[in-house]
Length: 451
Image 1 (cartoon, one colour):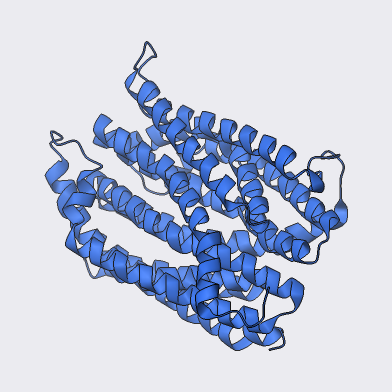
Image 2 (cartoon, one colour):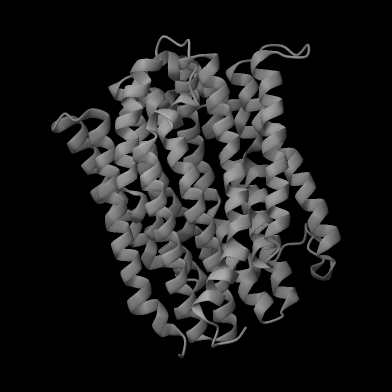
């Protein structure tokens, strides 16, 4: 691409690549949101159990997805160099590692009840959550391979295909939820188990569609040729880049999962409100994540062409776009919290007023961390495009585990601010991460390529 591309040109290219990724992430998160809405209308107990189960499963999933995130910049750089062999090797080994990881974590999900009880959760909620996780474990490997194929297509700038596949997956999940949770059209009423089964079926179908699409639309990469054949060098490269990303993801998701556990100590209604507020925050976060992944692709392209001007100008535009959306989100959260929360709760639910009251306070705090949450994930995307993953891991561990989690506990329980205090701890951890990672990119990252 032209080294002299204008800021407007960078913005147009970023949005053309990033908006379909945003849409695909929103459609993906819609699967969880649909579960929340339908389970919230089924019972507050089912919603609380699902919230706990999602927090547990997400920690495992997001750590395993580090290998898919590693595929993104590696394929982008290889494609910019027109190295089709490297594109195939990287993607194929990403599939291998992700599938092996997904199989390896199944026992943790199947026998999760003792872990949840040891973490201080209520026995009834822990029992229901473990049943949900046992079913969900079947879909872990397929869902991680889906992530790899999404990264492969995004790196090749085929983000429209990713968008439409995931949108249809969200529609399928909603339909399956309706049938299996409530027992419609002659199906048994499975409640929480029905939501888990719907998620698994959706992931399997999505994987089949993406495999078919990749095989027929990108035949030049012969992606699945000798898929069973080992490639030690390719395996090593993906693993070495991916494991720090996975641990970085784990550090961040661990912060949010720790807040879910702490909210469980506060009470079931607080945990239910936390689940709703977290789903809303996750939806807005997907916009920043989409922009971050688009930035990873563009930085990977700059790396492949050794183009520092393109890197610097594109990064500035990405940060500004993310900040603008964060400010818009803050306005929405502060002006219409009841409307947003009300989508997840049955009007006749006796627990609705209490959950709404807690949720309004949590969304007010969530508005505070929109800017820093967007900044830290965009900085991560820029650094990953440069295949810089080790130092960001250290920054994440310090920010989230040494600062964020202790802050949540101190403000929530020692000071006694309960749920609001726990969420203020989130703000502190995310702010530290944003500052450290932005500093890393703008002081060290931009100097790696000639201007």
